[in-house]
Length: 297
Image 1 (cartoon, helix red, strand yellow):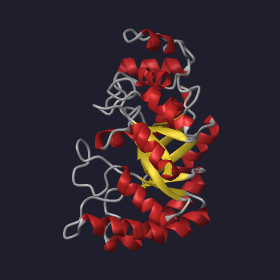
Image 2 (tube, one colour):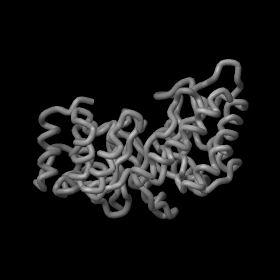
Image 3 (cartoon, helix red, strand yellow):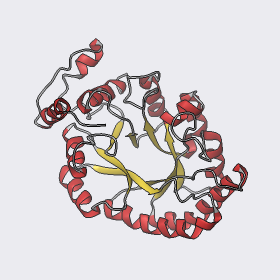
């Protein structure tokens, strides 16, 4: 997404504490538009994914703009090639947190035995990164389908790798959060979709520091019944992310009634951050206002 001049001006106005009203939308969104810092929400703590928000700005400026909108945290993808000390110092200066980052991505697959040693070594390094950032959680991805391996074999290897990593994670007190994807829209050819297999893996690993990155966007596309599935899997939910569907935009732009879903998470006792891994549809300020509106009940 390109950050257009109008969007940047709107975000900058928010940073300066200017109250703005965005034309269009429901009366509820108009009311939210009067809030100077829409990231300051009444129930849910949100973390802006700075890989998807403010993408026309340098990385550190994305963090600044997220804080200017009132959000208490940010999240990002791989830590490699990022200035970790600068991120830490800026977050301390702004009074916000890094809620989570990606420690192990799609490739090479965690689901192949040949990558086991590299995975375990990376987990050790990523725990040190988490400590540098004062971050408690990090995402790990199971991997795309491996030639010559069945799904049972691939998921068995994911389970084995996480079991082997668990002592390191427990010693460091850093949680690895395993993220199931969706294959219908975003990630065809992946080996882990939906909650049942992810729950089976994490319950078999049986560690308080190996849980699920429960991305509600992927879950909606893969299985639906968002509130019921969250209730069934509550003991293994380590982190929540969201985006609306279709489009992977912010809440209020698609088919998911996020007021109901976020209230369910809150009523179930979830109090950690919810990652905004979504693309702002009509600018970051409007997206932040819609996020605020989704947290009203």
